[in-house]
Image (cartoon, rainbow over all chains, first blue to last red; front, side, top):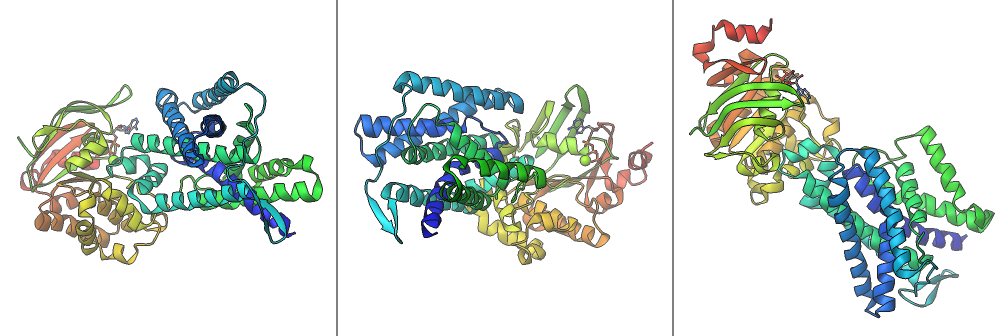
Length: 284
Length: 233
Ligand SMILES: Nc1ncnc2c1ncn2[C@@H]1O[C@H](COP(=O)(O)OP(=O)(O)OP(=O)(O)O)[C@@H](O)[C@H]1O
Ligand SMILES: [Mg+2]
């Protein structure tokens, strides 16, 4: 029981971090960014390259991964989203294509066999009788630290308020002196950074492989559909619902059914409450 | 050149033309009203001043052309209270006002105090989400948000639409104080010609996207063109 609670908390923190960057872009930019999983892949492989292959310090590796993710987000906004302005279907199709292209690039650079990322923080500890790796513990704590900072940023700073404003009323934001294009750009950068950093932890939790962008994308989509777009707190809660469901399914029912309950939940929510459990149209 | 000077303004929505050769000017410290029926082009005119529409012609403010889009217009000193308010529904009154302060961060304390002096109700309701507010309260938040941008020119689209007479009086008093006490220049649009004539010094009558008449309130009081624009055809 305790084991399940601890595993659930650890996994859910990571899921929340994975999902929040996706929610952000969906809320502010109104783009379903199907290439989001690719940021995680970029982050994971960048960390592998800088820290494991070049031997740079771990923290520097994480930062460089974040910078690359940020660049990927900014470039995508500039080269893809702006030219396709407003055409949602075209944007979504091209984001999906982009993910596949990035996957091909990764295969070219790193080969297509999976790679194991060494633990970011090695070691194991006991919490209430359950053994927990420092690695996943660090991932969870960092996830929480990032989520809390992001929440405070959005609620309490001028830029964060401007992001909320753009997500709720673009014209209202513009006539308040906020340039929605700048805010969108910023949001793409933040989303890319969050995705890449989440990717470092996700890869160290699972493994690096050129198809690793799919699973986190599904998690992110699930969190957004179940939680509804708009609320960081909602993202957090739903990440925990999904994380716990997976842990319980694996421990009590059958590991093969890991993702099945998440899918069932998605369908149930789509039928019963299509706007999501916490759904509003905007971030808040 | 006038403080706000609009010359031969044409505005377009796709191929449809909503404003035809509109010229209008406004001196510092004036209160001007643009009167017109539904669809006359009042909102289009104000949106165009903010750079929110596709236009030809020139709009200059304080001696320099305005052509950098809405954020630039705000930074130049134009505050806008739009027709449908465009508030941020799930943010508090306070946060809505603070978004208005985005480009005027040094004046936050001063502007916030001025807004609360003007509309004490907003101070009491600071934490309320604007989605739960009444129309009158939203109008106050909208004006308040515009004032938080430190404007020198305030443009307001139909400030009294849908409001009870008592709230109309309150809004009119607030606008007059903004001019008298704070030296703001004010341009409003109105369908309610009576309200416009009690507040403004000069009027423009807009009909089907073109200026039909212009003059002081006294000059236009009994002008048939005013009645025509007011009641439509
Ligand atoms: N976004 C738009 N797309 C196409 N046409 C528009 C758009 N907005 C306004 N129009 C047209 O432009 C003309 C002027 O509209 P506008 O909203 O400026 O009038 P108004 O005087 O503000 O009317 P009201 O009193 O109803 O607010 C109308 O014919 C309207 O149909
Ligand atoms: Mg209008």
